[in-house]
Picture 1 (cartoon, helix red, strand yellow):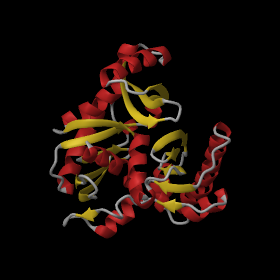
Picture 2 (tube, one colour; picture 1 turned 180 degrees about the horizontal axis):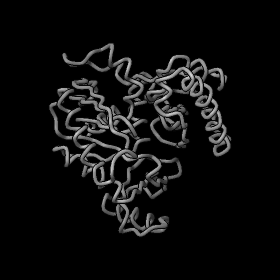
Picture 3 (cartoon, helix red, strand yellow; picture 1 turned 120 degrees about the vertical axis):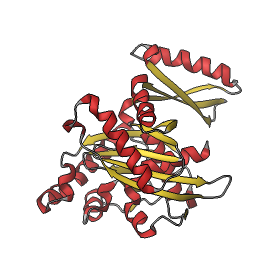
Picture 4 (cartoon, one colour; picture 1 turned 135 degrees about the vertical axis):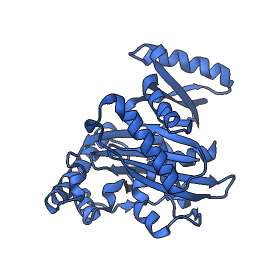
Amino acid sequence: MLGVELTGTELRLIELQGGAGEAAPVVTAVGVERLTPAAMLAPEAQLAARAEALRRCVLSSGAKTRRIALAVPQTAVLSAIVPFEVGLSEEALELRVTLEAEHHLSTSFDAVALDFERLGPRGDGRDDVLLVACRKEVVAEQRSLAEAAGLEAVVVDVEGYALGRALGAARAQRAREERVMALFLLGAWALQLFVYRGARLLYARSDAVGYGEDAMLSEAALAAYLEGAPAQAERALTSFYGAHPTLVLEEVAVAGAGAALPGLMAALEGRLGRPCWITDPFLRMALGPSVDASLLAAQAPGLMVACGLALRGCAG
């Protein structure tokens, strides 16, 4: 399965094969392709440009499969965890979920794509069910991109859930523990905070960073990023604690291209006053013959979303 993430300026691709049962999947292809910023393109040219970039990336990476998983941004979805009685059939649960979603949505139900997932028992005789709603046009954009590139989008996931899946791979030795973890996704344009209990997403927040790719290009911009991003991370955690005052974070992980900037981790740990670790979901995976291990390790924090999408495909 191909996991494909598009940021504002990059397309990132991971191909995983296998992974049935307890076996770890094999990384068979990795690709990163530069994108022309959307602001520089006419709206009607954006799809064609991204589809062409996706075709180039698939070709240059050597990926063989044409079945891909894509993600919509966390900010594009509404989600809720709702309890339902135990024992409902899939048909009955789908009807109940539809009725519940209609009650909560502020937009026309016909304009929304709805999905749900059983999360398991909650201890009071009921099951928690995750409801996720996204505008159909956002999902259609992802499918249109795949189709224009000559590929098949078999999964359209949500960014935060893909990240949680990759985070589980990065810490597989403790995957069954119900620990409360924070994951900072440090991008060129945004800093995002995701908080999980085990595999369950509890909280998500996104803030513009404002330094863009200049942080990678000049010493002055890098210095501004190293000061601004940790300060924004601290504010994001403060906001989380305000929303969940009884929760205690046990670990803080860092992902995204910004995690590799020199001096970033030291600045972040100094600002937060606690140790943090950089994610690498590929540590326990086998690598195909065409995959450069050292290059993959260097890129790993920025490939978390793509990896989580490919893992979703491997899991079916």
